[in-house]
Length: 188
Image (cartoon, rainbow, N blue to C red; front, side, top):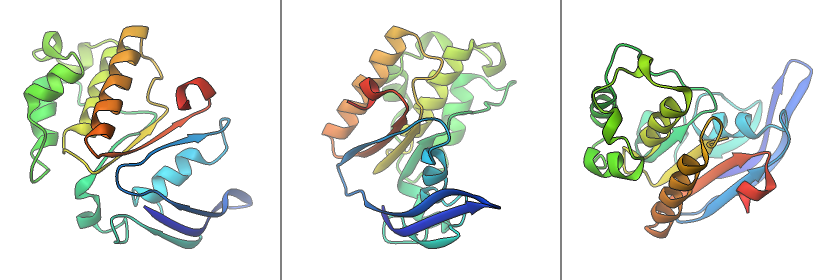
């Protein structure tokens, strides 16, 4: 990701003001700040979900609004909605089918301890279980860059530990990771 003088305004509110940042392959970057600091807005610009008011952002040397730029991107927003009637295995297969070389479902199931959830409908999962499934979807496309927005929200201690294990392993394998949080200890 390359951002140059990136600014985003919402009417009179300046969410980002001239941000310049490069995130290179294999880096692990933490964006720390209180709620309302612009972390999620920055991620939405990197994902191509919003256009900047001014400045530029490039994702894999392309405009992030270009779908071809996003094929190597995985992300988990703060709030996610899984299809309630689909089973976890169906959601994993459906999302994985959108990528040219997805991570094998077996690996995702092991990394996120989803084995016992595979035949459950997403609507029947607890909030923490839904969050684990949503986080797993960020990694299913075998991405070169993963954006995790407040990833531990709703996770218990064991699920948090498992998430950080996955993040460390994927980072060690060369995946760039961006994590937002308002907790310094998580960013550290």
